[in-house]
Length: 90
Image 1 (cartoon, one colour):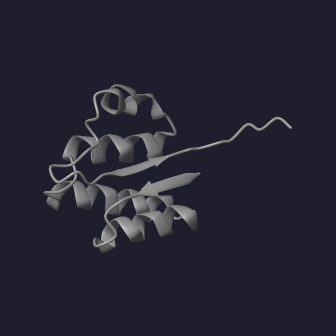
Image 2 (cartoon, rainbow, N blue to C red):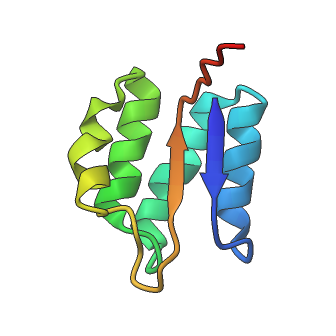
């Protein structure tokens, strides 16, 4: 799983990234949902949908929001958490 994070000033997104990297998914889910409740910078609906996608391992819930760029906050900051795989052919 790869996590892309912008806006290094916020501690909570950094902690979410670390929790996911250490496979502490339940902790990360709690932090994402708490961030959704109190964040003015990151879109609430996007954060809640991200938590649902992570919890259910069903990323389709984020497709339309990604296409519409609903993940971008009012100041241009965003948090994207999603599985990532590179297929390389040599």
